[in-house]
Image (cartoon, rainbow, N blue to C red; front, top):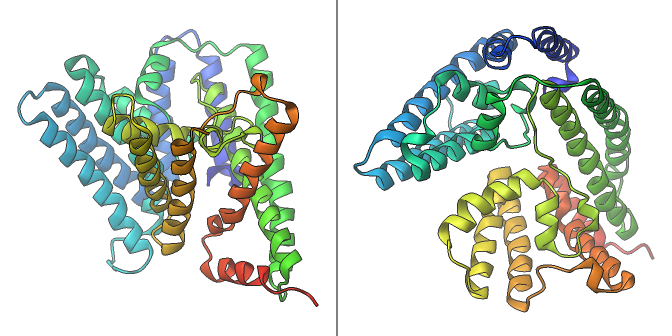
Length: 383
């Protein structure tokens, strides 16, 4: 995580200043940004630098091949995606110590679960657009290695990034003020709120838990991860936009979502958009039936669960959300138009949605013992 390292933050601020001072040079966003991305990774970790240099170069060659080839396009496309997914799975298994190798270092996996999604998005673009999708190595490397969003998103779309790359650096005073304020807000969330809330969570969870304490921890943890991840997103979006790129929003008022379908378009929005674009829409290009939509919802949520981590808890989390989304599709309750229903009905549906989310949100902690303890505590009534 760059943004908890003061040296890294100073380096990123320095890059923003360099871009601002060289704004009259049309190529400053492209050439200076590539130099910064590579130097930043090299200083942070030479192993990380070498791995991503090789990984990005190989995928760029694959991208160009897919743009040009006319034979075995679909097979090549599927094999390239499978190879990238296999690479991520292998590194996860090494991280879980199911396999060991002296060359493995946990830092190599840093950001890969996000960056592989960008690689696959570029492959989709090459597959469907063909020769016109070709882009220079300089811009492809900047897309994959873009430092502000490198470790935890938001997930950038290849097409949008390339459009921004062609635009000159045009960050004005008003945009600078807005994004600096956003970065400060994100830092406050990450450094002040999350630190304090984590201490409270650890203190309460260390005790013997009863029903009211488990309920408190589930709600508290939900708020904690919101401030944690939205704080990171605020910082990433702020710095990315100060560098001249239109970074997409990750959180779009998720607590005002009256259905789970709408919730997953507003919470970690770029992740939900990615799975919807690359799996849901690809598998069912025509308007899906309710049963097809329900089945695909289950598949997508299980895959999102596995994307978060290789454990049965995440699989069950995915099945839980997938079944709820499937029911919404089957019953026709995927959306609620705020203007066509009463305020009481709308906010009642929002509260119900948050109740469903809160029931499983503790799985995000990644600590199976803590999760089991909190769920056991729900049945421990204080008599």
